[in-house]
Length: 252
Image: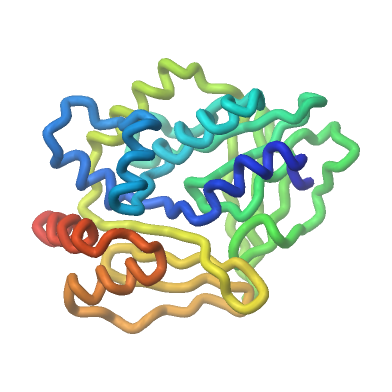
């Protein structure tokens, strides 16, 4: 179910890239008419402040890197042009097998989605998603992913793996970057014991999701302390974090 090495080599470049909407609010308040950044500007901001972006930013950046290596890839998603939108990428190997590459949900590895492949299985698998085993089941023109947690809880998500027209995708991206949620969010993958765990800062709370369970962290009462904690996990620039967290406080 793992992707071949050429796809993984590109994917690994993003191992330390969080998914977040802090950058979205920060850039929304910058003097720029166009709010969806191109890859060159995202790279510039990454170099300056250590920042990444939301699922649209990450998908656009990943598509660019895959295409530079001449790997066929295209965007997918659901509920575009709405608050519930989520996007990801499908990458194809040399045999035409498709792999789901979802940086927005912070997957650890791409996963095979072609049910006709000899390597495809509906068994529960570890090593693909932080803090959960995953199970991929065909559903219509897409795939239903079941996330099995250590406490017995099971959640699911349906992926439509039909290609989205790139022009339409970019228009939806611009729409999304102009849609501001007043609740801050940042998710990232971090080492924990012998696994990769999922750390999340969401609406002024933080927690760690692992195979040992979900650990809710102690409440923090100042922007400076939040900035310090996020910096410790992500390496994001402290001044950037304080600035954007203050902007979020003004929205709440």
